[in-house]
Image (tube, rainbow, N blue to C red; front, top):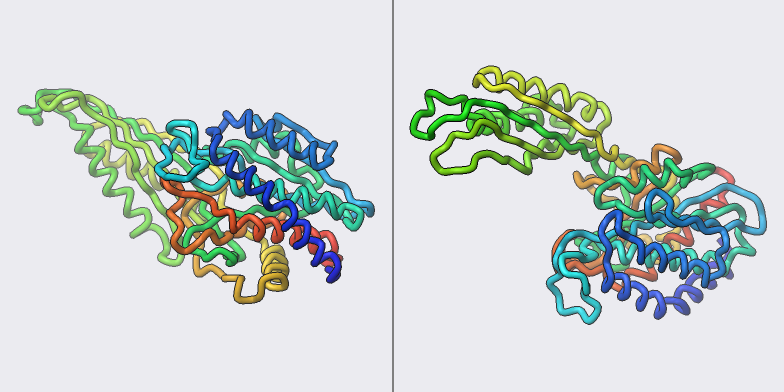
Amino acid sequence: MTLERNDDISRITAEILPDLVELRHHLHRNPELSNEEMETSALVAARLRKIGYVDIRTEVGGHGVIATLKGKRPGKTFALRGDMDALPVTEESDLPYRSCKPGVMHACGHDGHTTNLLGAAAVLFRLRDRLAGTVRFLFQPSEEIVGGAARMCAEGAMEGVDAVVALHGWPGLEIGMIGVLAGPIMASADTFDIRLAGRQAHAAMPNTAVDPIVTGAHIVTALQTIASRETSPLDSIVVTVTQFHAGTAYNIIPGAAELKGTVRTLSDAVRRTAPARMERIVAGISSACGASYEFSYRHGPPVVTNDAAIIDLIAGVTAERYGRESVMTLESPSMGAEDFSVYLQHAPGALLRIGVGAASPNLHTPTYNYPDAALPIGIEIFVRTALAFLDSEEM
């Protein structure tokens, strides 16, 4: 990348930053839940048109927006993704731009992600005459319920794409730092339901009952042996029961109980074995207790596996702009999930973590706020990575 273009990226980013800060504040003030991103989607499309984009698709996979920028010269296609939806969380902050919608807020920083992507679209549009190839901007709905990426891809979001990159604000990392990791960085996320049928009885006469609560309690405990006794210590799996519903009164042993939860893995091989292992435990304990059961298992997004070459590219452009000390190789992946993994089934790519401050509140909490200071860093990394990929003859 030439020195002239390097200088232009930083100059243009600085010029548009005040407007982007105001935009993020507006998005934070007006959050929308998954599958309800109508106003956000309309605002994104309007902003893209104002920049000068004409190749814009709306209502992709719900309320998704796709914009395409073609350079003067032919070449590869590189995609950048940002998510738009908020969470059902009541904000507890004194920010002047705090959420105006009770029970809804951007507690995961998607207002920042969307703004980063719009900023990158604005900078790259200004540099389009020096662009070799195509950049596709994917503004995704419904990441929080891990459905938007699959719907976007089903409607052609990744057709012809050679590589794709996304970022996620990350508490614990200082602003100015990015976190990178080749290979698995975020887990798959599946869900399960267990329905137990026993025999109802008076609580004082347990001998006449088949108690689904006791049966369920044994199942909750036994499911933990999948991680502790059935999976190699070098692999990872989390089996968590998050809901246990049963009973209506103090003096009645109920006739049924329901358990629900999630399974997280970092390996497709481990993931494939989970349903059978779980049902074997549920069936055995139910039989031993005299109860019957129904078991269902649903696959969610797969493991997010970062491509090593794309990670090296991101680390290189970041180090060139901000210094090598700004790049942190992460010690381990997160067992959290991200449906960005669906895009990676269509093309190589990477999800990077961008620092939002060591003292930043945790994600999904009522005081989380994507910091304005992280915006120019995310924009420049997006732009520089796109240009470096399109300029490379080796990738």
